[in-house]
Amino acid sequence: MPAEHSATGAALQGAIDPDGFPPPLPAKPVDLAAADRVSGLDALELGPKKEKGALGRRIWNSTWPKLLAIAIVVAIWQAAVLAEWKPIYVLPAPLDVFAVLRDLVTTADFWDGVRLTMTRAITGFLLAVLIGTVIGAAVSRFAPLRAAIGSLITGLQTMPSIMWFPLAILLFQLGESAIMFVVVLGAAPSVANGLISGIDYVPRTWLRVGKVMGMKGLAQYRHLILPASLPSFVSGLKQGWAFSWRSLMAGELLVIVPGTVSIGVRMQNARDLSDSALVISYIIVVLVIGILIDQLFNFADNKLRKRWGLTEA
Image (cartoon, rainbow, N blue to C red):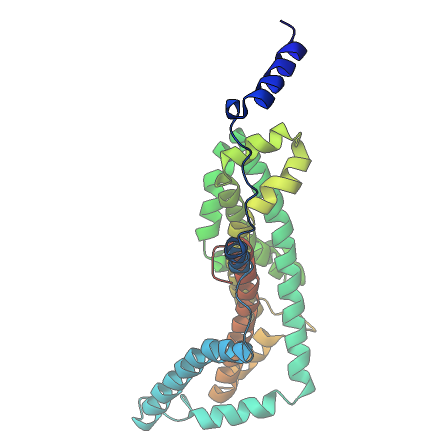
C-alpha cells in the first residue's frame, strides 16, 4: 500500500478509535527553579562579583608578608651592628644606610645611571627573547635540530654568565657590545627552553584538530601552538629576565665602558672609596628593581593562569 494511503488509514482509525493513539502530551510548565539554577551556574562560570574593598584587601594581603620579611632582615642587620660583628665603617647601621639612600635618590646623576642600566637590561632582554623564540620554535619543530643542539641549549642555560666575559672582552673590547653579548647568552637559553617545554606539552588532540581545520606551517604556530604554550613560555621569560639581570650586573662591574656611569660603575666606585653605606645603598636599589620587575611578571602570569582557569578568579 502506498505510504500516503497508510498514513490516511491510520488517521481515520485514530478518529474512529480514539484509543488507537496515545493522547497528546500536555505542555510542560516553565521550570523557573531550573532557570534559576542555570543562571547560578552561569554566574559561577563568570566568577563572583567583586565586593567593595576587595582590591584593598588583596593589596594588603600581598604586601604585609613582604613588609614582615623586610622588618626581619632589618632587625637581624641591626642586631649584627649592635653585637659589633664588624666595624661600623664596614657594616653601617640600617638608619645610616637609609639616610645615604634617601640623599642618593634625590640626585639627577643617580637617575641617569638607573636609566642607562635599564636601557641595557631591556635591550638585551628583548634581543634574548627574539633569538630564544626563534631557536625554541625551530628546535621544537625539527627533530634532527633538537637532537643536535637540544642538550647544548640546556648546557648554556646552566653555565655561569661571568664565564663569558673574558671572551666577550676579547671579541668586542670594553664596549656595549661585550655587555649585550653576555646578557643575551645568559637569557636566550631560558627563553628557548621555556618555549620548547610549552610546545612539547601541547595536547596532541589539539594538533590533530588544527590539521583538520586546515592549519599548517606558520598559521598553526600563530593560532594554535604558541597560544597553547604561552603559560610555559611566560615562565621561561621570567627565568630569562632573572638571568639577563644577573648577567648585566656582573657585566657593569667587570666591563666599564668609557664615558658611561651606570649602577654597576657607581657601585664599583663606592667600593674603591670604601664607602660601605653607599655600596649597600646600590645593592638595595638593584634588589628593589629586580623585585618590581618580578612583580610585573607575576601579574602577567596570574592573569594568564586565570584566563586558562588554573587559578581562582
